[in-house]
Structures are given as structure tokens and as C-alpha cells.
Image 1 (cartoon, rainbow, N blue to C red):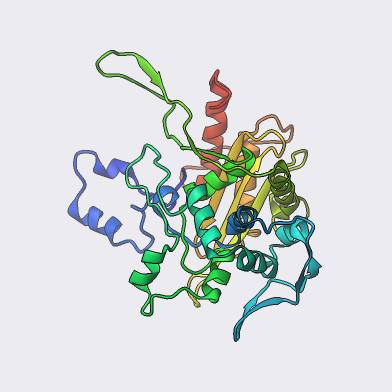
Image 2: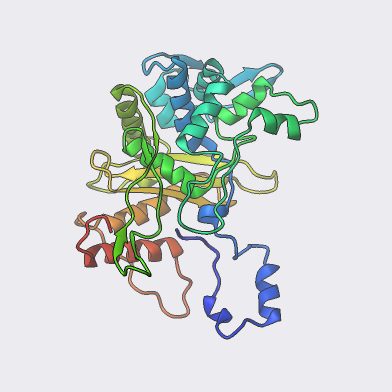
Length: 349
């Protein structure tokens, strides 16, 4: 739940001055925005997980079916660029290399209704219901949305192509994308996230433990989940997220880079879970205007996972920085998670 930039909460003790409050409010970096639950971003290629599940829903997914990639996908008079010229490519390699052409073709064959239905089913377009105030639900365009916001009220094949690769009229929070990573780790089950494990009833003074609540249970053949897990493993082992590799650990992920404005770098995405065959942690990292997901977000996720999974021999938690040194928020959070885990009798801490 790290969100940066942050601000000094101590400023509010005894009442914050108007000047200090205005400075925070007018800060262009928006420190008041809890990006983990409120920031809305196009998910980029991390959405290709949803596109895959939509193809399963439509009955058009075949893990071994090859598709030609000439370096683009033709939609009418427009060419949607791929990141490479992959030739004849099937699912595993397409996912590992994040081939736009393959996944746009998959979405076109699945259709927008299956994309939309799957997106809602995995938790996009509505809040997760986490026990925090101010969560955003994100956007996945419904028919009513299209009629309201499009001058002609129409949805075009090019829109489907954009959505297939997580661009265009789709947005999500980092928390929602972490839940999608957990859904794959769980073989199709998604649980409501919680910020607290238990609370004490003010009347009875009895402790009540929050019980797991299934939000989605997606029925799909076992081959689908094993293929997705294997593909996410290959992304780190030999694909776009090699920078997330941790010696001695097999884990899975998916990178994403989503365009924002022409004068800015892309937002950098990475989502994943670890270990690959015994998942204990799911993560989502989003860095605004930073560049490719494999270069920026993936190494941050690596450091968080490495710090959390203390059983890896070469893990060394970062030491406390000097008082005047900038704090790496992700690493600090990872260390806190790991130390909390060590001090708790509950292995889920």
C-alpha cells in the first residue's frame, strides 16, 4: 500500500497552517492522492491476462495456435504497432515477449462483449471493497458509457484493439491489478482485500477475525491456469521482466508500459506473484511517467518480493538510511512487511 510522494502527517498535529495545507493541495505531484487505491491508470500489457481469459470465455483460446506477427496489427486503415516482428508466434512466446499483434487478434476473435464480461468478472470497473475510504472503481466502457461519452455513441474495432493491450478507454488501480495477479496465483479465485485482519467489538469486547470472502471464481480448465502461470514465469526467466529475476526463486509476472501524453514517458507497470508454485505474495507496481515496465517497475517488485520472502539465503534487507538521505518507499515498505512477518506467529503476516 505504498503511495508516493507522501507528506508529513505530523503537520496536522494541533492543526495545520493554511499556508502548509495550500502548499500540499497545490503540489503538482498530488501527495494527497493514495495512488494504490485511488490512482487510475491504463493497465497496458498487464491487461493481456484479462484478454487471455476473455478468449477462454469465448471458446477461442488455444495455447498452441500460432498467429503471424509482422510487427503490427492492421485495423482498417490503421496499424497498431507491436514491439517487435515476431513471425509465427503462439501463446507462450507471445506472452513472454508481450506481442501486441497476438493479443489484439485474440481479442478480435473473442469480441468486446467477452472482454467486457471478463473485465468485470475479474474485478475491473468497480471497487474491490477494501476496508479503506476513497477507493476508485476504475473504468471499463459499457454500452451506456459509450453512448454518454462518444459523440456518435459507437464502439469501433480499433477500440477493441486498444483495450486488448490495456490502452484506450480502460483504467484500473494498482490494487485491482494486484488482485488480478492473485487471481492467477489462486487458479481463478479472487478474494476481497483487507487492510486489517481482525477487530475488537466495542460492545462485547470480543475479537472478530475477518473471514476470507471470494469475489470471483472463474471456471476454466486447469490447462488455462497452468499455462498462464508458466507464461508469467517465462516473462521473468527469459522475457520482458528479466530484471525481476531473483537467484534461487521461480516467480511469475507481467510487465506493462502505457502511453500517457506525447511529451511524457510511459507509465511503468509490473504485476506478479511469488513463489511460482507456492504463492505467498502478490504485487503490483506502477511508476508514473517512468519508462518501460521491465526497466523500472519490475526491479522494484523484485526488491519487495526478495525482502518479503526471507527464506532466500542471499536476501539482505536495506539498512536504515542516514537522516538526510531520500527514502526508497518501496524498499522501506518491503522491510516493514518482512519484519512484521518475522515477529508474528501467523505465517500470513
